[in-house]
Image 1: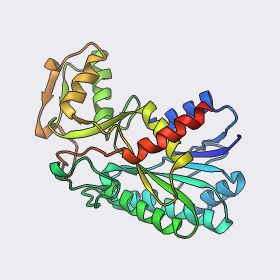
Image 2 (image 1 turned 30 degrees about the horizontal axis):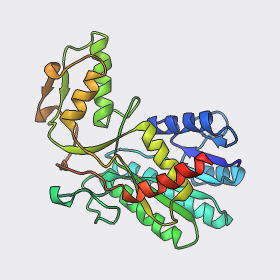
Image 3 (image 1 turned 60 degrees about the horizontal axis):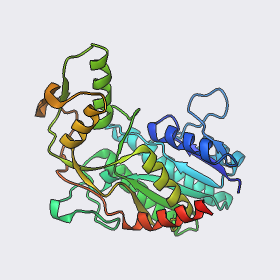
Length: 289
């Protein structure tokens, strides 16, 4: 069945992967993926009037809201990660639309997590330790608020992505940038911060599949993890990524002064994906029909 889908944040790695998947596998879907600064159909989420005009013009059946910022500038992070979401949900409410909205959350919302608390369930207490995590936690609160006001919104809380094209503000993005520089002869070693932390990494393709399952079968006002459910040390991930390029960790320099992370670094966090797996089974059965 044909659906009109609005994707925000389509210039990011996950946005590109989602758009490519939809174009390749769901040819009957009508995809709108406006970018900021385009001559036409521009969407700057910092401007309420552009959000309103875009939603009023498209009247989408589904919004996949992937746009966000990792900025450590509080005002910028709040404007993009909180205010823009409030504006989007309020426009849908004001127009009385039945649009399903999938908001992209983050494992950074959890913040302070002790090893024994893992794997983390979706109802775990939020104690963010970064501006990004804090603003994403407020986004989740907006989802609860507007779900209670009859807006069909659900949260897909993503853990750590692995794949090409990720922001250099993320470990994998920085690693891939250095690998590219090394292969071009622009550097002779890979420099990274401490690698002992344990994370939950999911490939871009698997993340897209989980997002679509959440979009189709997630319950309004609920949160679902997008993750592998498998704990992996950053060292293990590094070795695995290097191996794909025929490299090994003999070229790696590790040091506290080589990280760009500010503040507290969570030692271990990985997801319980029981709820998401139930949705995946429904989605897989539905797509096979």
